[in-house]
Image 1 (spheres, one colour):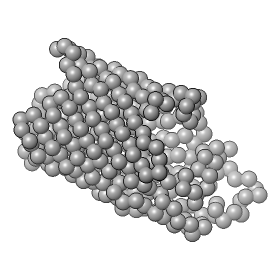
Image 2 (image 1 turned 180 degrees about the vertical axis):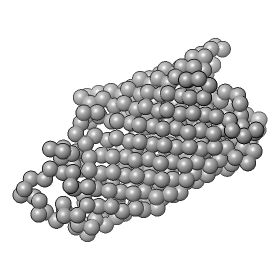
Image 3 (image 1 turned 90 degrees about the vertical axis):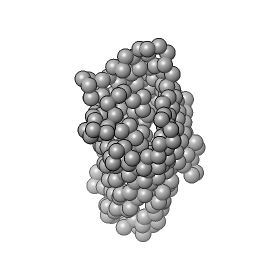
Image 4 (image 1 turned 135 degrees about the vertical axis):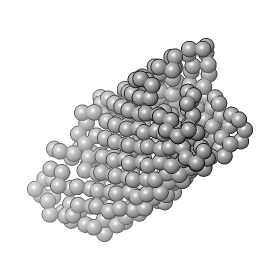
Length: 306
């Protein structure tokens, strides 16, 4: 039945289980603006990235996420601005977001910068019951009588401390918890909860050609267990990055990223759940295509570690 298995996991539209989580991204450390608006323009260049994530491929109604973001450093590298567009789909549920990001960068000394960022936009939520293969006995159920389509505003904030060899950040992409009323049953439920992110990364130069970049990400959501990602990446001659990562020691993956020409990056993630996680028979793939280009005279032409 089309999407019916995924729908059963959600139980019912009025259930708290339907409260949406932020999309997962395994390549967050290569594209931090996904989680933190303070990264907008922080590398003192123009950046554009496209990310596609297919989670638990082969599972009926599996999560699929698409994201486009672009950000640039402006006003002699004093501020940054960016745009994020994303779509996250799970079964009959589709969330679309458009966010504008702004950051103010405060140099602390020659090697350290503190950045504060804000983002604002809207989130559109849709539930299309027409995609469900509902048994005849349940077709008159009021819970399936009307599709859902509504939009809500969003605000987010974040801070980042960037050094020559490290990056530390904290953010709340959704400052506004969102409660909606379903058109079919009149029930109210919390659609989005605040997500708190804390991440850090450090670069170790093993020799002039190889560097190791370990990183960690902590997610905290009210009413849910704390989640942690651990990444270990090796960069070779500024051309190829290869590494491993784990999420809660329940899913493991491999990460590859290649530099194509001077300004293009192509990244790929292969993620394999273990017996302790949902969807153990289904693999996850994530692809990132990005570019970093200096477009103004005051942009940085040197290679940045972050």
